[in-house]
Image (cartoon, rainbow, N blue to C red):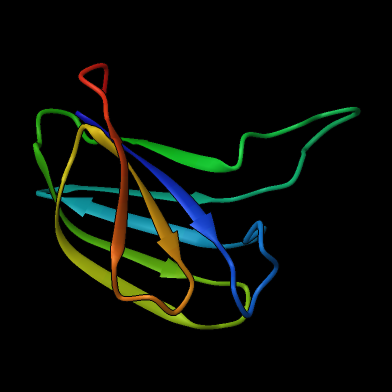
Length: 100
């Protein structure tokens, strides 16, 4: 199972470039950083995808925004796309995809 995370900055840049996301599910911890590009004429998608093996829930998801704000969310079902908005305590569920 996996989880796709979209980020939207409010105080930080709208695209949240430089934000770091850490997800823990059981003994698995994954970390990803949103980047703008990493090579000649490169373009990166504006979301992070995390594979979490057999786990159907993420125990904890934390975001460190470029502004310095840190947010933590708990007990999130995998197999979906979510949107995190800087400063909001609410998760926005975008889609549920059985491919995750």
